[in-house]
Amino acid sequence: MKITTARKITLWLVVLAVVGGIAVSAGTGTLSSFGWESIAAICPLGAIETFLASKTIFPRALIVLVILIGVGVVLGKVFCAWLCPVPPLRKFFTFKNPFKKEGENAESGNKSSRLSGESVKSSKLSAKSAKSAKPSSESKATAALASEIKIPESCDSAKDPAACPSGCTSCAEKRKKFDSRHVVLGGALVSTAIFGFPVFCIVCPVGLTFASIVALWRLVGFNEPSWALLIFPLIIIVELFVLKKWCFKFCPLGAVMSLMSIPNRLFRPRVDSSKCLREQGGECTVCVSVCEEGLDPHFSDGMHECTKCGVCKEECPAQAISIPLYAPAAKHAPPKDKPAPST
Amino acid sequence: MDDVTRRTFIAGGAGAVALLAVGGTAKYAFGSDQMLRPPGGQNEDTLIANCIKCDRCWTVCPLKCVVPANMNDGLLNSRTPKLDFHKGYCDFCVDANDGKPLCRANCPTGALGSFDPDTEWIGAAVLDTELCLAYGVARSCMRCIEGCPFDAIVADEYGRPVVDTEKCNGCGYCEFICPSNTYRTYSGSTKRAIVVEPSEISRTEFVEGNPIEAKGGQA
Ligand code: SF4
Ligand code: SF4
Ligand code: SF4
Ligand code: SF4
Ligand code: SF4
Image 1: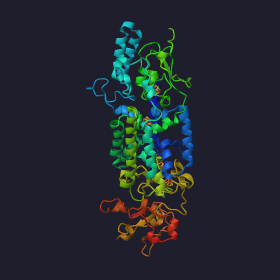
Image 2: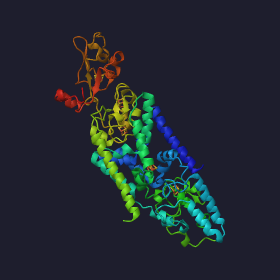
Image 3: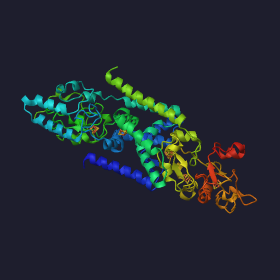
Image 4: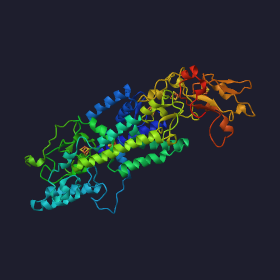
Protein backbone atom coordinates (compact mmCIF):
# COMPACT_ATOMS: atom_id res chain seq x y z
CA MET A 1 0.00 0.00 0.00
CA LYS A 2 1.14 3.51 -0.73
CA ILE A 3 2.27 5.40 2.34
CA THR A 4 -0.02 8.33 1.54
CA THR A 5 -2.99 5.93 1.37
CA ALA A 6 -2.00 4.36 4.66
CA ARG A 7 -1.80 7.82 6.18
CA LYS A 8 -5.26 8.75 4.95
CA ILE A 9 -6.71 5.55 6.35
CA THR A 10 -4.95 6.06 9.69
CA LEU A 11 -6.30 9.58 10.03
CA TRP A 12 -9.84 8.51 9.15
CA LEU A 13 -9.66 5.67 11.66
CA VAL A 14 -8.54 8.12 14.34
CA VAL A 15 -11.34 10.58 13.52
CA LEU A 16 -13.86 7.73 13.51
CA ALA A 17 -12.54 6.44 16.84
CA VAL A 18 -12.76 9.90 18.40
CA VAL A 19 -16.22 10.72 17.06
CA GLY A 20 -17.43 7.18 17.74
CA GLY A 21 -16.08 7.40 21.29
CA ILE A 22 -18.05 10.59 21.85
CA ALA A 23 -21.18 9.11 20.24
CA VAL A 24 -21.26 6.04 22.48
CA SER A 25 -19.92 7.89 25.55
CA ALA A 26 -16.91 5.63 25.79
CA GLY A 27 -14.87 8.33 27.49
CA THR A 28 -12.01 7.77 25.09
CA GLY A 29 -11.46 11.48 24.50
CA THR A 30 -9.96 13.39 21.60
CA LEU A 31 -6.39 13.74 20.36
CA SER A 32 -5.66 15.97 23.38
CA SER A 33 -5.84 12.77 25.36
CA PHE A 34 -7.01 9.54 23.86
CA GLY A 35 -7.20 6.18 25.52
CA TRP A 36 -9.11 3.78 27.68
CA GLU A 37 -9.76 4.56 31.36
CA SER A 38 -6.50 5.45 33.08
CA ILE A 39 -4.32 4.38 30.16
CA ALA A 40 -4.38 7.31 27.82
CA ALA A 41 -2.02 9.26 25.66
CA ILE A 42 -1.81 12.95 26.42
CA CYS A 43 -0.73 15.84 24.26
CA PRO A 44 2.92 16.45 25.20
CA LEU A 45 2.51 20.22 24.99
CA GLY A 46 -0.67 20.03 27.09
CA ALA A 47 1.16 17.98 29.71
CA ILE A 48 4.03 20.48 29.94
CA GLU A 49 1.54 23.35 30.10
CA THR A 50 -0.28 21.79 33.05
CA PHE A 51 3.01 21.37 34.92
CA LEU A 52 3.79 25.06 34.45
CA ALA A 53 0.26 26.33 35.08
CA SER A 54 -0.29 24.41 38.32
CA LYS A 55 3.39 24.46 39.37
CA THR A 56 2.97 20.77 40.22
CA ILE A 57 3.78 17.66 38.27
CA PHE A 58 0.98 15.14 38.01
CA PRO A 59 2.75 11.74 37.96
CA ARG A 60 0.47 10.10 35.41
CA ALA A 61 0.97 12.93 32.93
CA LEU A 62 4.74 12.80 33.49
CA ILE A 63 4.86 9.05 32.79
CA VAL A 64 2.93 9.50 29.55
CA LEU A 65 5.18 12.39 28.56
CA VAL A 66 8.29 10.24 29.05
CA ILE A 67 6.74 7.46 26.96
CA LEU A 68 5.91 9.98 24.22
CA ILE A 69 9.49 11.24 24.19
CA GLY A 70 10.48 7.61 23.56
CA VAL A 71 7.98 7.48 20.69
CA GLY A 72 9.57 10.63 19.29
CA VAL A 73 13.00 9.02 19.40
CA VAL A 74 11.73 5.96 17.56
CA LEU A 75 9.25 7.47 15.11
CA GLY A 76 10.25 11.13 14.89
CA LYS A 77 7.66 13.77 14.05
CA VAL A 78 5.30 11.07 12.85
CA PHE A 79 2.30 12.78 14.50
CA CYS A 80 2.38 15.61 11.98
CA ALA A 81 1.88 13.42 8.93
CA TRP A 82 -0.11 10.53 10.34
CA LEU A 83 -2.41 11.85 13.08
CA CYS A 84 -2.69 15.61 12.92
CA PRO A 85 -5.91 16.74 11.21
CA VAL A 86 -4.47 20.14 10.35
CA PRO A 87 -2.55 19.47 7.09
CA PRO A 88 -5.44 17.54 5.48
CA LEU A 89 -7.84 20.25 6.63
CA ARG A 90 -5.70 22.90 5.04
CA LYS A 91 -5.37 20.94 1.86
CA PHE A 92 -9.10 20.30 1.73
CA PHE A 93 -10.02 23.96 2.05
CA THR A 94 -7.27 25.35 -0.15
CA PHE A 95 -8.69 26.06 -3.56
CA LYS A 96 -6.31 26.79 -6.32
CA ASN A 97 -6.67 30.21 -7.81
CA PRO A 98 -7.14 29.57 -11.55
CA PHE A 99 -6.15 33.14 -12.43
CA LYS A 100 -2.74 32.81 -10.93
CA LYS A 101 -0.03 31.20 -12.92
CA GLU A 102 1.90 28.26 -11.54
CA GLY A 103 4.62 29.58 -9.35
CA GLU A 104 2.65 32.68 -8.52
CA ASN A 105 0.38 30.98 -6.07
CA ALA A 106 0.33 32.43 -2.64
CA GLU A 107 2.42 29.67 -1.20
CA SER A 108 5.07 29.59 -3.86
CA GLY A 109 8.55 30.37 -2.81
CA ASN A 110 7.77 28.74 0.46
CA LYS A 111 9.77 25.82 1.61
CA SER A 112 6.77 24.23 3.20
CA SER A 113 4.58 24.49 0.14
CA ARG A 114 3.65 21.41 -1.75
CA LEU A 115 3.65 21.26 -5.44
CA SER A 116 0.29 20.78 -7.01
CA GLY A 117 -0.29 17.49 -8.76
CA GLU A 118 0.30 18.89 -12.22
CA SER A 119 3.49 20.61 -11.39
CA VAL A 120 4.86 17.47 -9.77
CA LYS A 121 4.05 15.62 -12.95
CA SER A 122 5.65 18.24 -15.13
CA SER A 123 8.77 18.35 -13.04
CA LYS A 124 8.87 14.58 -13.29
CA LEU A 125 8.70 14.95 -17.04
CA SER A 126 11.40 17.56 -17.03
CA ALA A 127 13.44 15.38 -14.76
CA LYS A 128 13.11 12.59 -17.24
CA SER A 129 13.99 14.84 -20.14
CA ALA A 130 16.89 16.16 -18.14
CA LYS A 131 18.15 12.63 -17.87
CA SER A 132 17.80 11.87 -21.53
CA ALA A 133 18.89 15.29 -22.69
CA LYS A 134 21.99 15.50 -24.82
CA PRO A 135 24.73 17.76 -23.49
CA SER A 136 23.89 20.47 -26.04
CA SER A 137 20.33 20.88 -24.83
CA GLU A 138 21.13 20.31 -21.20
CA SER A 139 21.22 23.93 -20.20
CA LYS A 140 17.82 24.47 -21.80
CA ALA A 141 16.38 21.52 -19.94
CA THR A 142 17.91 22.85 -16.78
CA ALA A 143 16.30 26.22 -17.29
CA ALA A 144 12.94 24.63 -18.11
CA LEU A 145 13.09 22.45 -15.03
CA ALA A 146 14.32 25.19 -12.79
CA SER A 147 11.44 27.43 -13.81
CA GLU A 148 8.93 24.72 -13.05
CA ILE A 149 10.14 23.54 -9.70
CA LYS A 150 9.64 25.87 -6.83
CA ILE A 151 12.80 27.25 -5.46
CA PRO A 152 12.73 28.29 -1.84
CA GLU A 153 12.87 32.03 -1.43
CA SER A 154 15.86 31.79 0.83
CA CYS A 155 17.80 30.12 -1.98
CA ASP A 156 20.23 32.44 -3.71
CA SER A 157 19.49 30.73 -6.99
CA ALA A 158 15.93 31.99 -6.82
CA LYS A 159 17.14 35.23 -8.33
CA ASP A 160 18.53 33.38 -11.27
CA PRO A 161 16.76 30.02 -11.64
CA ALA A 162 19.03 28.90 -14.45
CA ALA A 163 21.97 29.11 -12.08
CA CYS A 164 20.54 26.62 -9.62
CA PRO A 165 23.32 24.11 -9.11
CA SER A 166 22.42 20.50 -9.44
CA GLY A 167 21.71 19.10 -6.02
CA CYS A 168 20.22 22.11 -4.36
CA THR A 169 21.45 21.72 -0.83
CA SER A 170 21.02 25.25 0.34
CA CYS A 171 17.47 24.77 1.60
CA ALA A 172 18.24 21.61 3.51
CA GLU A 173 21.14 23.30 5.20
CA LYS A 174 19.07 26.30 6.13
CA ARG A 175 16.61 24.26 8.17
CA LYS A 176 17.88 25.16 11.60
CA LYS A 177 17.30 23.22 14.79
CA PHE A 178 15.51 26.16 16.32
CA ASP A 179 13.23 28.51 14.47
CA SER A 180 10.17 30.70 14.91
CA ARG A 181 8.05 27.75 16.09
CA HIS A 182 10.30 27.44 19.11
CA VAL A 183 9.89 31.13 19.88
CA VAL A 184 6.09 30.66 19.73
CA LEU A 185 6.48 27.64 22.02
CA GLY A 186 8.44 29.79 24.46
CA GLY A 187 5.66 32.41 24.38
CA ALA A 188 3.03 29.73 25.00
CA LEU A 189 4.89 28.38 28.02
CA VAL A 190 5.64 31.80 29.52
CA SER A 191 2.02 32.86 29.07
CA THR A 192 0.86 29.59 30.62
CA ALA A 193 3.11 30.07 33.64
CA ILE A 194 2.00 33.69 34.11
CA PHE A 195 -1.74 33.23 33.71
CA GLY A 196 -2.00 29.79 35.28
CA PHE A 197 -3.80 27.82 32.61
CA PRO A 198 -2.80 26.00 29.41
CA VAL A 199 -2.96 29.01 27.09
CA PHE A 200 -2.13 27.31 23.82
CA CYS A 201 -4.97 24.79 24.28
CA ILE A 202 -7.44 27.66 23.79
CA VAL A 203 -6.24 28.29 20.24
CA CYS A 204 -4.73 24.92 19.29
CA PRO A 205 -6.02 24.06 15.81
CA VAL A 206 -5.87 20.34 16.59
CA GLY A 207 -7.96 20.71 19.73
CA LEU A 208 -10.32 23.16 18.06
CA THR A 209 -10.93 20.82 15.13
CA PHE A 210 -12.38 18.28 17.51
CA ALA A 211 -13.99 20.99 19.63
CA SER A 212 -15.86 22.15 16.52
CA ILE A 213 -17.10 18.60 15.95
CA VAL A 214 -18.19 18.44 19.60
CA ALA A 215 -19.94 21.82 19.36
CA LEU A 216 -21.82 20.60 16.29
CA TRP A 217 -22.66 17.40 18.12
CA ARG A 218 -24.07 19.33 21.09
CA LEU A 219 -26.11 21.54 18.78
CA VAL A 220 -27.65 18.64 16.87
CA GLY A 221 -27.97 16.19 19.75
CA PHE A 222 -28.86 18.50 22.63
CA ASN A 223 -30.10 21.63 20.88
CA GLU A 224 -27.34 23.53 22.61
CA PRO A 225 -26.24 26.40 20.36
CA SER A 226 -23.03 28.18 21.23
CA TRP A 227 -20.78 30.88 19.88
CA ALA A 228 -18.18 28.14 19.80
CA LEU A 229 -19.56 26.97 16.49
CA LEU A 230 -18.52 30.28 14.96
CA ILE A 231 -15.47 31.16 17.04
CA PHE A 232 -13.61 27.83 16.90
CA PRO A 233 -13.65 27.50 13.10
CA LEU A 234 -12.76 31.19 12.87
CA ILE A 235 -9.62 30.68 14.97
CA ILE A 236 -8.67 27.70 12.79
CA ILE A 237 -9.19 29.78 9.64
CA VAL A 238 -6.99 32.58 10.95
CA GLU A 239 -4.23 30.15 11.88
CA LEU A 240 -4.26 28.02 8.77
CA PHE A 241 -5.34 30.37 6.03
CA VAL A 242 -4.40 33.85 7.17
CA LEU A 243 -1.05 32.82 8.64
CA LYS A 244 -0.71 30.17 5.91
CA LYS A 245 2.59 28.68 7.01
CA TRP A 246 1.22 27.53 10.33
CA CYS A 247 3.01 24.18 10.58
CA PHE A 248 6.28 25.50 9.30
CA LYS A 249 6.49 28.77 11.20
CA PHE A 250 4.11 28.87 14.15
CA CYS A 251 2.91 25.55 15.51
CA PRO A 252 4.34 25.16 19.03
CA LEU A 253 3.11 21.56 19.10
CA GLY A 254 5.20 20.91 16.02
CA ALA A 255 8.07 22.59 17.87
CA VAL A 256 7.70 20.18 20.82
CA MET A 257 7.57 17.24 18.40
CA SER A 258 10.69 18.49 16.60
CA LEU A 259 12.58 18.76 19.90
CA MET A 260 11.51 15.25 20.88
CA SER A 261 12.64 14.01 17.46
CA ILE A 262 16.18 15.36 17.55
CA PRO A 263 17.64 11.96 18.55
CA ASN A 264 15.51 10.14 15.95
CA ARG A 265 17.54 8.08 13.45
CA LEU A 266 15.00 5.47 12.43
CA PHE A 267 12.65 5.49 9.43
CA ARG A 268 14.60 8.16 7.62
CA PRO A 269 14.24 8.27 3.86
CA ARG A 270 17.25 6.85 2.06
CA VAL A 271 18.28 7.65 -1.48
CA ASP A 272 19.70 4.93 -3.69
CA SER A 273 22.38 6.89 -5.51
CA SER A 274 22.60 4.35 -8.31
CA LYS A 275 18.99 5.21 -9.22
CA CYS A 276 18.80 8.89 -8.27
CA LEU A 277 18.65 11.10 -11.37
CA ARG A 278 20.49 13.90 -9.68
CA GLU A 279 23.32 11.69 -8.54
CA GLN A 280 23.47 10.33 -12.05
CA GLY A 281 24.15 13.83 -13.30
CA GLY A 282 20.59 15.00 -14.00
CA GLU A 283 18.90 18.13 -12.67
CA CYS A 284 16.14 16.49 -10.64
CA THR A 285 15.07 18.07 -7.34
CA VAL A 286 11.59 16.58 -7.10
CA CYS A 287 12.17 15.13 -3.63
CA VAL A 288 13.22 18.53 -2.26
CA SER A 289 10.34 20.38 -3.82
CA VAL A 290 7.60 18.00 -2.67
CA CYS A 291 8.79 17.82 0.93
CA GLU A 292 6.44 19.76 3.21
CA GLU A 293 9.28 20.16 5.65
CA GLY A 294 11.70 21.58 3.09
CA LEU A 295 14.11 18.69 3.51
CA ASP A 296 16.39 17.03 1.03
CA PRO A 297 16.46 13.28 1.70
CA HIS A 298 19.99 13.16 0.27
CA PHE A 299 21.32 14.86 3.36
CA SER A 300 20.98 14.45 7.07
CA ASP A 301 20.60 18.19 7.69
CA GLY A 302 17.35 18.93 9.52
CA MET A 303 16.22 15.32 9.03
CA HIS A 304 14.77 15.18 12.55
CA GLU A 305 11.95 17.29 11.08
CA CYS A 306 10.97 14.44 8.74
CA THR A 307 7.36 13.45 9.41
CA LYS A 308 7.70 10.09 7.65
CA CYS A 309 5.03 11.23 5.23
CA GLY A 310 6.47 9.21 2.38
CA VAL A 311 5.76 11.83 -0.26
CA CYS A 312 9.38 12.05 -1.44
CA LYS A 313 9.42 8.27 -1.83
CA GLU A 314 6.23 8.30 -3.85
CA GLU A 315 7.05 11.29 -6.02
CA CYS A 316 10.62 10.33 -6.92
CA PRO A 317 10.49 9.76 -10.70
CA ALA A 318 13.22 7.11 -10.47
CA GLN A 319 11.89 5.27 -7.40
CA ALA A 320 15.24 5.91 -5.77
CA ILE A 321 13.92 6.65 -2.29
CA SER A 322 12.99 4.12 0.37
CA ILE A 323 12.16 4.55 4.04
CA PRO A 324 13.92 1.69 5.78
CA LEU A 325 13.88 1.04 9.52
CA TYR A 326 17.45 2.17 9.73
CA ALA A 327 19.70 3.77 7.17
CA PRO A 328 23.33 4.69 7.72
CA ALA A 329 23.73 8.41 8.34
CA ALA A 330 23.21 10.42 5.19
CA LYS A 331 26.02 12.61 3.97
CA HIS A 332 26.36 16.34 4.37
CA ALA A 333 28.40 17.09 1.26
CA PRO A 334 26.72 17.96 -2.05
CA PRO A 335 26.71 15.09 -4.52
CA LYS A 336 28.72 16.83 -7.20
CA ASP A 337 31.75 16.63 -4.94
CA LYS A 338 31.41 12.89 -5.00
CA PRO A 339 32.78 10.84 -7.83
CA ALA A 340 29.86 9.91 -10.05
CA PRO A 341 29.13 6.21 -9.90
CA SER A 342 29.89 4.49 -13.17
CA THR A 343 26.88 3.47 -15.19
CA MET B 1 21.29 39.29 12.04
CA ASP B 2 20.78 37.82 8.60
CA ASP B 3 17.50 37.94 6.75
CA VAL B 4 16.27 34.51 7.69
CA THR B 5 17.02 34.99 11.36
CA ARG B 6 15.27 38.33 11.44
CA ARG B 7 12.15 37.01 9.75
CA THR B 8 12.14 34.02 12.06
CA PHE B 9 12.43 36.29 15.04
CA ILE B 10 9.59 38.54 13.89
CA ALA B 11 7.18 35.68 13.07
CA GLY B 12 8.01 33.75 16.25
CA GLY B 13 7.93 36.88 18.38
CA ALA B 14 4.55 37.90 16.98
CA GLY B 15 3.20 34.42 17.73
CA ALA B 16 4.60 34.51 21.25
CA VAL B 17 3.13 37.95 21.94
CA ALA B 18 -0.22 36.81 20.53
CA LEU B 19 -0.26 33.92 22.99
CA LEU B 20 0.52 36.25 25.88
CA ALA B 21 -2.42 38.38 24.73
CA VAL B 22 -4.67 35.33 24.49
CA GLY B 23 -3.65 34.30 28.00
CA GLY B 24 -4.35 37.71 29.51
CA THR B 25 -7.59 38.23 27.62
CA ALA B 26 -9.00 34.85 28.52
CA LYS B 27 -8.01 35.23 32.14
CA TYR B 28 -9.14 38.77 32.82
CA ALA B 29 -11.62 39.78 30.14
CA PHE B 30 -13.73 36.72 29.58
CA GLY B 31 -13.49 34.87 32.85
CA SER B 32 -16.63 33.93 34.69
CA ASP B 33 -18.02 33.09 38.08
CA GLN B 34 -17.45 29.96 40.05
CA MET B 35 -18.91 27.05 38.15
CA LEU B 36 -20.46 23.77 39.17
CA ARG B 37 -17.76 21.16 38.54
CA PRO B 38 -17.70 17.36 38.63
CA PRO B 39 -16.56 15.84 41.95
CA GLY B 40 -12.89 16.66 42.50
CA GLY B 41 -13.00 19.79 40.37
CA GLN B 42 -14.04 22.10 43.19
CA ASN B 43 -10.69 23.83 43.41
CA GLU B 44 -11.22 26.20 40.51
CA ASP B 45 -7.55 27.21 40.22
CA THR B 46 -6.37 23.60 39.99
CA LEU B 47 -9.04 22.73 37.48
CA ILE B 48 -8.28 25.68 35.22
CA ALA B 49 -4.53 25.12 35.52
CA ASN B 50 -4.69 21.45 34.63
CA CYS B 51 -7.62 20.97 32.30
CA ILE B 52 -6.44 20.49 28.72
CA LYS B 53 -10.02 20.24 27.39
CA CYS B 54 -9.64 16.67 26.25
CA ASP B 55 -13.33 15.68 26.50
CA ARG B 56 -12.57 12.50 28.46
CA CYS B 57 -14.48 13.31 31.65
CA TRP B 58 -17.83 14.34 30.23
CA THR B 59 -17.97 11.55 27.68
CA VAL B 60 -17.44 8.89 30.36
CA CYS B 61 -20.06 10.07 32.89
CA PRO B 62 -22.57 7.19 33.09
CA LEU B 63 -25.38 9.49 34.25
CA LYS B 64 -24.64 12.20 31.67
CA CYS B 65 -24.56 15.05 34.17
CA VAL B 66 -21.14 16.31 33.02
CA VAL B 67 -21.20 18.51 29.93
CA PRO B 68 -18.51 20.60 28.26
CA ALA B 69 -18.83 24.27 29.16
CA ASN B 70 -19.34 26.40 26.10
CA MET B 71 -18.47 29.93 25.04
CA ASN B 72 -21.35 31.33 27.10
CA ASP B 73 -19.35 30.32 30.18
CA GLY B 74 -16.39 32.41 29.07
CA LEU B 75 -13.35 31.80 26.92
CA LEU B 76 -11.34 30.48 29.86
CA ASN B 77 -13.98 27.95 30.86
CA SER B 78 -15.09 26.87 27.46
CA ARG B 79 -14.63 23.13 26.89
CA THR B 80 -13.86 22.51 30.56
CA PRO B 81 -16.26 20.17 32.39
CA LYS B 82 -19.30 21.49 34.22
CA LEU B 83 -22.39 19.86 35.66
CA ASP B 84 -25.82 20.19 34.13
CA PHE B 85 -28.42 18.64 36.39
CA HIS B 86 -31.13 18.97 33.79
CA LYS B 87 -29.34 16.25 31.87
CA GLY B 88 -28.58 13.90 34.73
CA TYR B 89 -27.36 13.79 38.33
CA CYS B 90 -24.23 12.52 40.04
CA ASP B 91 -24.25 9.32 42.08
CA PHE B 92 -20.46 9.46 42.49
CA CYS B 93 -20.40 6.43 40.23
CA VAL B 94 -21.73 4.14 42.98
CA ASP B 95 -23.58 2.08 40.39
CA ALA B 96 -21.04 2.17 37.63
CA ASN B 97 -17.73 2.05 39.48
CA ASP B 98 -18.19 1.30 43.21
CA GLY B 99 -18.28 4.96 44.13
CA LYS B 100 -14.98 5.84 42.47
CA PRO B 101 -15.81 8.73 40.15
CA LEU B 102 -15.14 7.71 36.56
CA CYS B 103 -14.71 11.32 35.48
CA ARG B 104 -11.78 11.61 37.83
CA ALA B 105 -10.33 8.22 36.86
CA ASN B 106 -10.40 9.35 33.24
CA CYS B 107 -8.79 12.74 33.77
CA PRO B 108 -5.19 12.48 32.52
CA THR B 109 -3.86 15.66 34.12
CA GLY B 110 -5.13 15.77 37.68
CA ALA B 111 -7.58 18.57 36.90
CA LEU B 112 -10.15 16.52 38.79
CA GLY B 113 -8.66 15.72 42.19
CA SER B 114 -9.68 13.49 45.03
CA PHE B 115 -13.21 13.72 46.36
CA ASP B 116 -14.86 12.26 49.46
CA PRO B 117 -18.65 12.60 49.30
CA ASP B 118 -18.87 12.27 53.09
CA THR B 119 -16.85 15.38 53.83
CA GLU B 120 -16.88 17.29 50.55
CA TRP B 121 -19.56 18.61 48.32
CA ILE B 122 -20.14 19.60 44.73
CA GLY B 123 -22.28 22.51 45.84
CA ALA B 124 -25.45 23.01 47.81
CA ALA B 125 -29.10 22.85 46.81
CA VAL B 126 -31.01 26.11 47.01
CA LEU B 127 -34.78 26.13 46.96
CA ASP B 128 -36.72 28.93 45.29
CA THR B 129 -40.09 29.10 47.04
CA GLU B 130 -41.46 31.25 44.19
CA LEU B 131 -41.08 28.33 41.82
CA CYS B 132 -41.58 25.32 44.09
CA LEU B 133 -44.91 23.60 43.48
CA ALA B 134 -45.23 22.66 47.17
CA TYR B 135 -45.22 26.33 48.08
CA GLY B 136 -47.87 27.07 45.47
CA VAL B 137 -51.62 26.55 45.57
CA ALA B 138 -51.48 22.85 44.88
CA ARG B 139 -49.00 22.03 47.67
CA SER B 140 -48.77 18.55 46.35
CA CYS B 141 -45.15 17.92 45.35
CA MET B 142 -42.94 15.74 47.54
CA ARG B 143 -40.53 14.51 44.92
CA CYS B 144 -37.28 16.03 46.18
CA ILE B 145 -38.10 15.20 49.81
CA GLU B 146 -38.63 11.59 48.86
CA GLY B 147 -35.88 11.43 46.29
CA CYS B 148 -32.85 12.97 48.01
CA PRO B 149 -30.34 10.15 48.49
CA PHE B 150 -28.78 11.96 51.45
CA ASP B 151 -31.98 12.85 53.30
CA ALA B 152 -30.99 16.46 52.99
CA ILE B 153 -34.48 17.73 52.26
CA VAL B 154 -36.99 17.68 55.08
CA ALA B 155 -40.65 18.64 55.16
CA ASP B 156 -41.68 21.63 57.23
CA GLU B 157 -44.94 21.73 59.18
CA TYR B 158 -46.92 22.26 55.96
CA GLY B 159 -45.13 19.42 54.16
CA ARG B 160 -43.05 21.84 52.10
CA PRO B 161 -39.40 21.01 51.32
CA VAL B 162 -36.59 22.71 53.25
CA VAL B 163 -32.96 22.00 52.42
CA ASP B 164 -30.69 20.88 55.24
CA THR B 165 -27.50 22.30 53.80
CA GLU B 166 -25.31 20.39 56.28
CA LYS B 167 -26.39 17.11 54.73
CA CYS B 168 -26.65 18.13 51.10
CA ASN B 169 -23.63 17.37 49.00
CA GLY B 170 -24.83 18.76 45.72
CA CYS B 171 -25.52 15.53 43.91
CA GLY B 172 -28.23 17.24 41.86
CA TYR B 173 -30.85 14.52 42.12
CA CYS B 174 -33.45 16.99 43.40
CA GLU B 175 -32.79 19.41 40.56
CA PHE B 176 -32.89 16.56 38.07
CA ILE B 177 -36.31 15.30 39.17
CA CYS B 178 -37.85 18.65 40.12
CA PRO B 179 -41.00 18.95 37.96
CA SER B 180 -41.56 22.70 38.51
CA ASN B 181 -40.52 23.81 35.09
CA THR B 182 -42.57 21.15 33.38
CA TYR B 183 -45.78 22.66 34.68
CA ARG B 184 -45.12 26.35 34.47
CA THR B 185 -42.48 28.62 33.12
CA TYR B 186 -41.04 31.56 34.87
CA SER B 187 -40.28 34.39 32.47
CA GLY B 188 -39.23 31.88 29.86
CA SER B 189 -36.29 30.62 31.88
CA THR B 190 -35.63 26.94 32.35
CA LYS B 191 -34.56 27.35 35.98
CA ARG B 192 -36.10 24.78 38.29
CA ALA B 193 -37.36 25.39 41.82
CA ILE B 194 -34.41 23.62 43.41
CA VAL B 195 -30.97 24.35 42.01
CA VAL B 196 -27.54 23.23 43.11
CA GLU B 197 -25.26 26.26 43.48
CA PRO B 198 -21.49 26.05 43.49
CA SER B 199 -19.86 26.89 46.78
CA GLU B 200 -16.61 28.65 47.43
CA ILE B 201 -16.02 26.80 50.67
CA SER B 202 -15.90 23.09 51.39
CA ARG B 203 -18.65 21.21 53.15
CA THR B 204 -16.57 20.74 56.29
CA GLU B 205 -15.88 24.46 56.40
CA PHE B 206 -19.58 25.08 55.99
CA VAL B 207 -20.57 22.69 58.76
CA GLU B 208 -17.99 24.11 61.12
CA GLY B 209 -18.26 27.69 60.10
CA ASN B 210 -20.64 30.40 59.37
CA PRO B 211 -23.63 29.37 57.29
CA ILE B 212 -24.34 32.88 56.06
CA GLU B 213 -21.16 33.03 54.00
CA ALA B 214 -21.57 29.49 52.85
CA LYS B 215 -23.31 29.87 49.58
CA GLY B 216 -21.33 31.08 46.63
CA GLY B 217 -23.01 31.94 43.37
CA GLN B 218 -26.03 34.10 43.01
CA ALA B 219 -28.52 32.12 45.13
S1 SF4 C 1 3.15 21.30 12.77
FE1 SF4 C 1 1.41 21.35 14.21
S2 SF4 C 1 -0.42 21.66 13.01
FE2 SF4 C 1 1.26 21.07 11.60
S3 SF4 C 1 1.07 18.89 11.37
FE3 SF4 C 1 2.49 19.22 13.04
S4 SF4 C 1 1.23 19.27 14.93
FE4 SF4 C 1 -0.14 19.47 13.17
S1 SF4 D 1 11.87 13.91 3.80
FE1 SF4 D 1 10.30 12.74 2.63
S2 SF4 D 1 9.22 11.55 4.19
FE2 SF4 D 1 10.36 13.14 5.28
S3 SF4 D 1 8.90 14.84 5.52
FE3 SF4 D 1 10.06 15.24 3.63
S4 SF4 D 1 8.81 14.30 2.00
FE4 SF4 D 1 8.06 13.46 3.95
S1 SF4 E 1 -18.79 10.87 39.68
FE1 SF4 E 1 -19.68 9.61 38.06
S2 SF4 E 1 -21.82 10.26 37.98
FE2 SF4 E 1 -20.73 11.84 39.11
S3 SF4 E 1 -20.11 13.35 37.57
FE3 SF4 E 1 -18.39 11.94 37.75
S4 SF4 E 1 -18.76 10.40 36.18
FE4 SF4 E 1 -20.70 11.49 36.46
S1 SF4 F 1 -10.68 14.81 31.71
FE1 SF4 F 1 -9.56 16.34 32.90
S2 SF4 F 1 -8.25 17.42 31.41
FE2 SF4 F 1 -9.81 16.29 30.24
S3 SF4 F 1 -11.47 17.77 29.92
FE3 SF4 F 1 -11.97 16.63 31.80
S4 SF4 F 1 -11.11 17.84 33.48
FE4 SF4 F 1 -10.17 18.57 31.56
S1 SF4 G 1 -30.67 18.19 48.44
FE1 SF4 G 1 -30.57 17.72 46.25
S2 SF4 G 1 -28.41 18.07 45.73
FE2 SF4 G 1 -28.53 17.98 47.94
S3 SF4 G 1 -28.04 15.84 48.38
FE3 SF4 G 1 -30.28 15.99 48.25
S4 SF4 G 1 -30.81 15.50 46.14
FE4 SF4 G 1 -28.58 15.90 46.21
